[in-house]
Image (cartoon, rainbow, N blue to C red; front, side, top):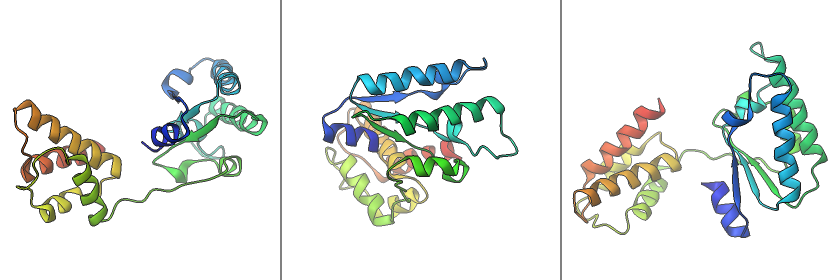
Length: 190
């Protein structure tokens, strides 16, 4: 969501690099694909987003280290170091502690998003459901159901609850509907 907002604010296209299509089992092929990505970064000014970056940027000294991934990370670090493009490179992970420390020296900024407070969660939910009638919602009850979820998970839960209301041809949203969607998001993230 942050990458999309940044790209929109800068008026640049957003390209998400899918690591499952980048990382292969063949020696040298992943680094070659990564070179193509960095060639594109040089040629096309945009926001390039590497999601679930711990799959590529994991600590090289880890006990579970795979030699090929270590070489790919070394290539990535070299490509980053040599990058002089006008593009913006973003990476995200939910497991910052798994990342190789050298990455933190290559990126200009590290932004950590903490879970929203109860008030913040309510603000997100109210914003995402503003086009529906929410007068029947017990916000204190719904806040409690949102505990432990990220901003993105709360947003998606509200979008799902709104879709469900629309599918049943209603413009009214209830506490139970939002709580059900929040509960589903919690069970999906565990």
